[in-house]
Length: 591
Ligand SMILES: Cc1cc2nc3c(=O)[nH]c(=O)nc-3n(C[C@H](O)[C@H](O)[C@H](O)COP(=O)(O)OP(=O)(O)OC[C@H]3O[C@@H](n4cnc5c(N)ncnc54)[C@H](O)[C@@H]3O)c2cc1C
Ligand SMILES: *[C@@H]1O[C@H](CO)[C@@H](O)[C@H](O)[C@H]1NC(C)=O
Ligand SMILES: *[C@@H]1O[C@H](CO)[C@@H](O)[C@H](O)[C@H]1NC(C)=O
Ligand SMILES: *[C@@H]1O[C@H](CO)[C@@H](O)[C@H](O)[C@H]1NC(C)=O
Ligand SMILES: *[C@@H]1O[C@H](CO)[C@@H](O)[C@H](O)[C@H]1NC(C)=O
Ligand SMILES: *[C@@H]1O[C@H](CO)[C@@H](O)[C@H](O)[C@H]1NC(C)=O
Ligand SMILES: *[C@@H]1O[C@H](CO)[C@@H](O)[C@H](O)[C@H]1NC(C)=O
Ligand SMILES: *[C@@H]1O[C@H](CO)[C@@H](O)[C@H](O)[C@H]1NC(C)=O
Ligand SMILES: *[C@@H]1O[C@H](CO)[C@@H](O)[C@H](O)[C@H]1NC(C)=O
Ligand SMILES: *[C@@H]1O[C@H](CO)[C@@H](O)[C@H](O)[C@H]1NC(C)=O
Ligand SMILES: *[C@@H]1O[C@H](CO)[C@@H](O)[C@H](O)[C@H]1NC(C)=O
Ligand SMILES: *[C@@H]1O[C@H](CO)[C@@H](O)[C@H](O)[C@H]1NC(C)=O
Ligand SMILES: *[C@@H]1O[C@H](CO)[C@@H](O)[C@H](O)[C@H]1NC(C)=O
Image 1 (tube, rainbow, N blue to C red):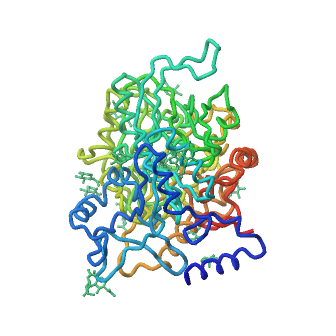
Image 2: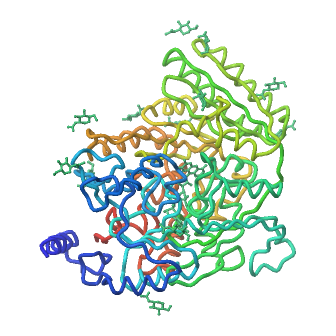
């Protein structure tokens, strides 16, 4: 009773003169469903509603009613597994998004409790629908609309801004939509012209890249999908809704350029097919407008491509001084566009004052002469810089993309290349940022850019060369994704991961976020939005003008479509379309 009063009073204060109706219904409100209402909702679902969902670590708290030593052993053994977290409705890949972190408190539930610690619910939804049918999604949307609940959609939970969970929200968990279907002649619904038949793959919302790659390989085709350890990022949801980039993008386009069709449940609970000939506004908006702002996707169909041989190139160089480091970065920046134009894609992380690592691919084995000579030119020239030690400069021929993916992202025991699988852990905290730096900046402001890159010191960097080529040839206004992507070759993305211990405070998170954000200041200055921009799927939570950073000139049209399709603000996410004015947990609109 007392708690209810305090929360209500706080709400009124924070709302000022506006009515409480601009808040979602939460457990302390009389509009929240009763136990009976939850029960009858549960009976409408294909399998029972998950009630009283607790965080992954809850079973490890010895003095609590959640304590369960068997469940705790499972949680402890799997807490760093991406696949385990993707397949758990009560966990995300990154633990800080499970926690409720305000400016002065952290409410979390570490799998390894401190003595005397309690497991806090944080942002883990208490109610979760483990959906397996379209009707489950429709019922859930109707129920959430009826009771004005906050609704969140969780797939793998890889997302980098905490958008798949939310305090006091109802969760729609779509992971068990696992179907993958290869279709020799796919015709988008309603398309009658002669040129609309494609060799395609349809993936349901919960399918993951590793499985999509396997299916493509079995059919001797390739697909432009994510560059992801163990293939664990989702293929059918957040990736393409936010844009979707791939090491094959320079050859075949962004994820959104490869989408032929979506099936989606809209905020009014209707189930529709969206493609280039029907629901065309939605087709434009969903290709880059961000999940789940326009509806809950149940499947996406992608074009497939010939399964060509691939050449991988691996380069590692270390430096003995800051000067050598800067000179190496300057040389790489000066080569960057030429290397891309010669047909190379991939990643180029560098580690502050340590060195540069290239993991690149090109179509064709052996690669064409221009590709070989351009990249070899960089290898050779870099070795001439005093203090630069080129320790690896290797090319490896692969029969197809799948073998390259397997060697680099599933089993990196060969000991060269990005070693992504060894370097990136799930079950830790993450703070990230990204910036799309247009190609011209590499030519016109190379020295300033190299200096700005050298300033990114605090995080695990992962700069991906995923643009140019086919990405640049697409009409920038053909999909919602920011036009900046069309000008950009490399997405400069950075992730700082860290574990929490008893010294971590809310201020620690603020400091880390601020540090990463500030380190990007010179990049923003070199390529201000909307000329440059930020990748919606790699958000910087401190970005202020995020509308322009994520979408540039496309934001106004996105907002208009959003307001029409979701007039009750059912599907809102942090820094998503039409989230202006809402608090950080999207529970109350503040103005
Ligand atoms: C290790 C790692 C590697 C990555 N590599 C790449 C890469 O190579 N290229 C790239 O472009 N991106 C990459 N990303 C970013 C990735 O695209 C995003 O994290 C993406 O949002 C993940 O989508 P998901 O559906 O798997 O995850 P989730 O976190 O479950 O969902 C992501 C967002 O989509 C929403 N959503 C989930 N399901 C649905 C649905 N059915 N309908 C509508 N909305 C839904 C969620 O609410 C959330 O907002 C990477 C991320 C990580 C952590
Ligand atoms: C259950 O489904 C029926 C039919 O779709 C609907 O009329 C009813 O409102 C639903 N009840 C709940 C509690 O969701
Ligand atoms: C939290 O701290 C940040 C940075 O110090 C500040 O900008 C913000 O206004 C604070 N938020 C609240 C709710 O106090
Ligand atoms: C459990 O409770 C007892 C008694 O209050 C306390 O001594 C002990 O430290 C607690 N154990 C844990 C793991 O919190
Ligand atoms: C969700 O549903 C799937 C498919 O029926 C099932 O295997 C899984 O155990 C369920 N998970 C939970 C947490 O209920
Ligand atoms: C090599 O490939 C690049 C990129 O596709 C192309 O521009 C170039 O013309 C090719 N060169 C030769 C010699 O085939
Ligand atoms: C270029 O070709 C030569 C000769 O085959 C080979 O030794 C070298 O590794 C290649 N370099 C690159 C970067 O492709
Ligand atoms: C780095 O190596 C260069 C070339 O070998 C050498 O001239 C220089 O003194 C070295 N610098 C440091 C700081 O070791
Ligand atoms: C370059 O690195 C290799 C491997 O680490 C090392 O053996 C070699 O001595 C280094 N060379 C120089 C000039 O530092
Ligand atoms: C990459 O991983 C392999 C095995 O997992 C390891 O032997 C090797 O040292 C790693 N290389 C780097 C550069 O981290
Ligand atoms: C923090 O943890 C460390 C090691 O786990 C321990 O030695 C220390 O006593 C703890 N400090 C507090 C204040 O709990
Ligand atoms: C470098 O990063 C720091 C934060 O670490 C930031 O304050 C500064 O503005 C950045 N830019 C330059 C050019 O140093
Ligand atoms: C980038 O280069 C242009 C012309 O080369 C120059 O006018 C501009 O000031 C530079 N921008 C920055 C931020 O250095």
